[in-house]
Image (tube, rainbow, N blue to C red; front, side, top):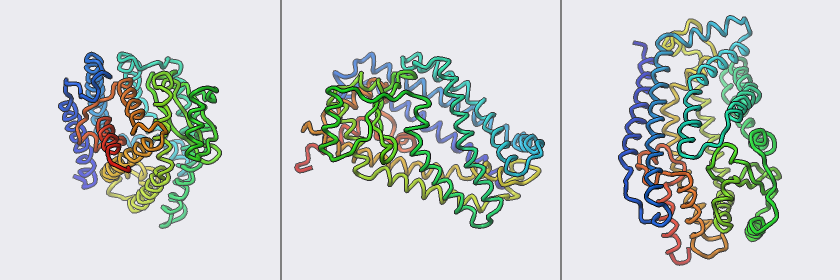
Length: 419
């Protein structure tokens, strides 16, 4: 058997077995006993409902992963990639448009495979547990907008990458890296003023107690705010959230309308203080720098596998190409990506603890983070969060620490003199 094919099949099967094992361990870590920290916050019935939500989503995810694995294996072994390549080449385009056609066809196949799962998750599972507020019209419109954005933004980037690899030579990976970084930075600036308003309405926060509390906190932190907005998150879900977006004069503070319904003014300010902590502690530029470095590593390794005959033979391809090399490399890079993701998640969880401590010190309430704790509790209950995830599940999948770990860290920090 082709060595590349054996490696790819092993990676696919091993990845699936790890996901299955972690999911089963996570289900076993569920306990019917309500943690003491949530006594009086969760009633027993709602806590049982949150565990059922975890069980349903875990089983659904495993079904989706199983179907995806079987479809991928069948597609590879049956020569599906070569068939798609023949269709793309049948248009008689030059290499770059042919590569775009090849990528579009694969994306359509993947999208059609995932569409039933997306529909079921939104209109069955989320509906069953009271989260879904998405209408069929909104769902379809979101899908169309997402496709158009992918074509308009992703298409030129992919074309540029293909052009660099087709024409530049051994140093093409550097040009691809620079182009990808420039693309990310441009999108970061465009997102709050162009992209996000395509999907949601952003309304300046009305005058009142909350706005006064936010501007007062920002002034105390000498933090210039370019805009405070509410977002109609309730048009898709009852889940609550808040975030910063954009840079410089495009920077915005955004609150889901659902968040404002569920948290008190003091709790919202504490959540804002946490988000501001990420800015003050330079978490965002550091994470971006790490992501950019990881991207450079990926392009460099990719450049070593372009038009590799053994790799193309593994996928049953009759002709080699730059554009197919990009797709096939993704299979080889998967284990590296997983390892890096574990590291990124660990670093992100560390940042969350630091942002929590920043919020506890600066929210102006002098309660040692109690407003943030109460806000986190309310959000956990509202979102039916799993309070007792398995540590291995956390390591692989959580960018934020589990809620009980965050609360414990906040209480320990408050108990330390001078912290």
